[in-house]
Each structure stands twice: as structure tokens, then as C-alpha cells.
Length: 154
Image (cartoon, rainbow, N blue to C red; front, side, top):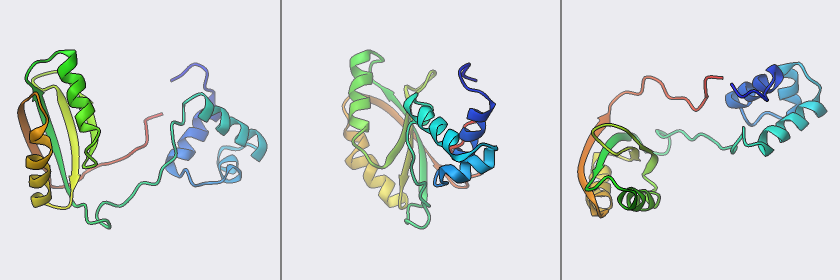
């Protein structure tokens, strides 16, 4: 845990991970602090980068985005220009909601969300396969989500 965070800061971060739409007064009550000091701590946590942004987590099913795939990508040559070129291209695909550089047999791991298998097929052939420098792609369809969270284990 970061050395400059005390127990109250951790409690505030946990409370905000559960529900960031809470007011400073609601968070203060949850962590046992008065509103003004709690608000100041929240602002400090934002300024210091502990809270990088506040977003709404949308329901994929309600938005008819029911298909989720994990895609392993290996580039032709594992050098910085190829890695940078792939990373730049992948940032333009809204279907890719996560992209990680990984160690091992592949260079990247993508999490891709689409409406269905046909939508993924279009994404693959019309977008991903046209990115220069790709050597190999392995795709895995996720059939059941066992756990999904945005909460960090603090």
C-alpha cells in the first residue's frame, strides 16, 4: 500500500470504489469523518492521482453487447517500432476495451466486446487483421463471466 495513505484514505477509496456517485457527505458518514475534511481528502486523492477518473460502469447486456472475447496477438518482430505501431492502431478500435502487453508466447492480450459472433468476425476481418505487423492471433470466446470487478484489492 502507498506509504502516504492512512487508514481513512483507504476507507475513502474503498467507499468510492463501491459507489463513486456518493456525495462527500455520504462518504464522510461511511468512513466516520465530517464532510469538509472528507471532501478535502477526496480532492487530494484526485490531485495526487490515486483517483484517476470517475466513470459509470455500463451494463453490456442492456446495451446488446453480449459477446466478449480474449484475443492473443503476436507481432512479426518483437521490437519497439512494431509494438508501438500495434498499440497506436489498437487504440482506435472501440471494440477493444483492454489491451495489455504480456510476457510469454504472445505480445498482447486484448479484451474485445461486440454484439455477437458475427460482429466479432467483422471486427477481426475488417479491423484487427488489417493492422500491419501481426504474425499470429488466437481468439477465445468467453461464455460465462464468473467475476468482473473494477475494485482494486486495497
